[in-house]
Length: 500
Ligand SMILES: Cc1ncc(COP(=O)(O)O)c(C=O)c1O
Image (tube, rainbow, N blue to C red; front, side):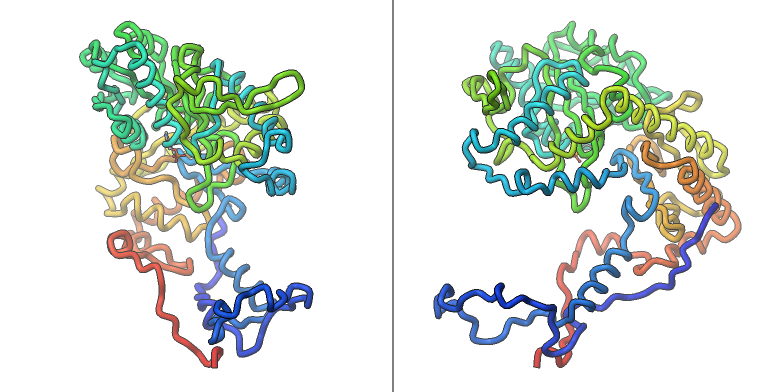
């Protein structure tokens, strides 16, 4: 059942425009620094213009700000390709244990045995789940994992003096980071089209397979949420001309626990730990994009790798001479690695399989409802089940009512549901990429479906209402072009008398 937001719009003044002279939170005496520790020339001559607010004013300000934004803890967040699943709070608690949180990156190995153990066991569990032989946890996100993996492919060919291999093939449904990573590593990119059904066009692939091919990069399940039925044949075709197969495993959550990617014929893959195995997504990171490789690529992985001898854990630099080098200031985003390991261990193998199956079931339940909505269509994968996500198009709705995908996305905020990913993948016009994740209950899924139904119905009866939405959020429709081209990152503060 839909509960439209009823909360009135409110504006929250800047904290600098709140409070009054002399107001402050309680500060225990012991916190006052002894004056003599600060050299005279560093002591301020004029007071610092900090907000002067009471503790209650501060708490209310921060709590209100937190309510003005949408998050997974507030309502459904079916943002395709982002896997906005629930992050168990126990992970956050454990990540804050002083032994983990206060660890110094330069601490000697014997004093960080626990940290090394976490890295080591994460490597081991990822090896098991992917079927590969070696793993690095270093890359701090998916795109960085891709870049690492492509550099590993390059190092492999160079070590064999196979330097004519200067091209990577990528399907047109790929995430934009794939061609970007390949180009950054110095490769030319050939894009191949997808078939009507959304799969790799085998004829198109065949036509570009030459002895110049260094590798083939594919996302599977792909960005349409479809599992590539010909994947083994595709990997064999690429191997037959001497190329390597790269799996963009950002969508690993659609197959984890069910298939081991190494068995499909891949040589290297990255995973987005922050997606498949939970991890906070806020503010663009931090993430973690471990790379797993087959035995023949092990020696090119970044150094060091966490290793174990007898009962002692250590950083292994033994492949230093052949390694592509380091791709992270430390040896990986430890906090995310820890959360991922906790999630994996708490679920166990059968549990992970269940999360995957539930994510797929949830996506298909929603797909079933969306297929029946007037104005929305499913252009690719028309008659097949999806994996963890699917892509709808609002082209028909736009044509018949003038209401676009962007308008639907904005209107959803009035119902307390975050919008799906929009206008991606690029091969679908007016795309709505929907990924409910395994976290959502049937009631939540029904809510998301009802919101789509209600907005599309409104589009036919009162299109302007949808086009001018959102109506109930703190900020209405923004001028997104100006916002992107001329961002204003500070605001002139109207000074009140609080500093006088
Ligand atoms: C298919 C795919 N590949 C690569 C990436 C890049 O990952 P990241 O954003 O962690 O760099 C994403 C991001 O969601 C993705 O969905």
